[in-house]
Length: 86
Ligand SMILES: [Zn+2]
Image (cartoon, rainbow, N blue to C red; front, side, top):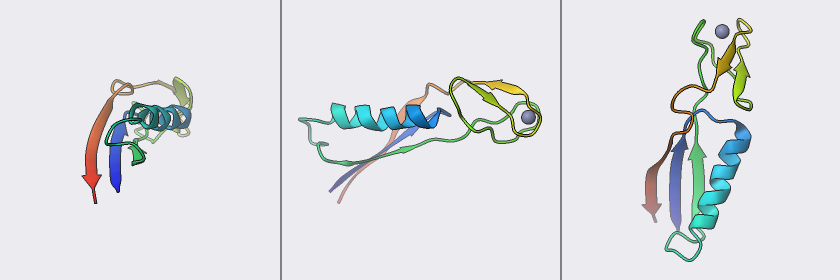
């Protein structure tokens, strides 16, 4: 059983799901085919009050101060964290 853990920047839930989907597509015909794919993400923080902002689309509204938080740098980040073979 193969397990792939990827890490993405603070993206919306929809983006996270499409990363999972594309990793699944990319693994077709490779050793990773049929692998369990897990995508980890972290929520963006409001620059003003440091509250966690619910990711939604490209702009996020802070629940604390109502500040519009743009997708922070790193939002496009995509990396492989680990590949495990059991
Ligand atoms: Zn805030």
